[in-house]
Length: 115
Image (tube, rainbow, N blue to C red):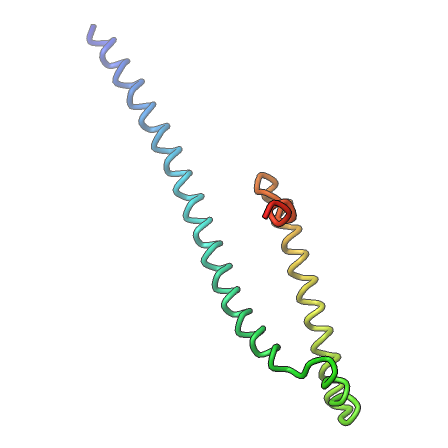
């Protein structure tokens, strides 16, 4: 009888430790997800500042006039365009890599189509 009681206690303890390890794992994942969200939000805020500044740049019609009159401006604008293009390519590559690493997450295109 005493051995049976000890056995039941051991089984109960094992169940509790399994539940605890599952909760710990979930907690780790939740913390990691929160850090990802925080980092994404910080990046979004930084990009918003950049976009606000970019919106103050001359629009297409005025841009052509600037480039005609000042070759330096044309060169700088071309360099800026190339850098922006490279940044977009890097973001798309990052997005593809994240989709590969996390196939269980919904696809962004699917989410956009649903809304």
